[in-house]
Length: 99
Image (cartoon, rainbow, N blue to C red; front, side):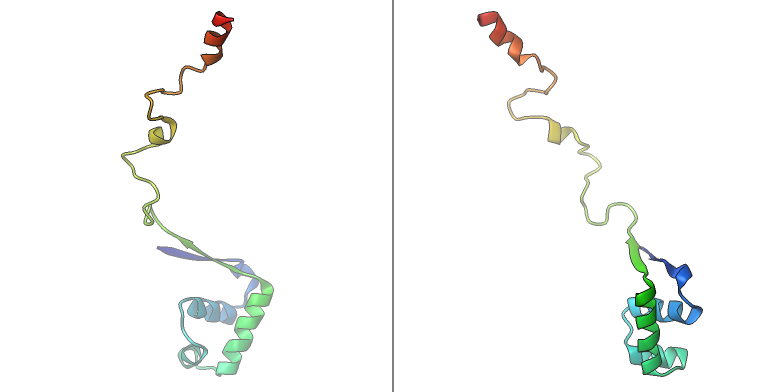
């Protein structure tokens, strides 16, 4: 898993630190102790960062959610149960021959 913070160039160094720690799930108190600043400063820095706009993006390698089965491909979505492969699209020709 890879985490990106988009729009980080608009943030100050301290705002970046607070955002990174906040997005990791740390509380304001824990961030304050780690950065040796007050909890109120953490809240202020986080609010400033949110006002400047940033976006956290989680990049997951491969298919961790199991949405795609590599053995299936897309062929199951195209095939019907009646054996029709979808290749014969001239079904109307038979109707024309009978008329």
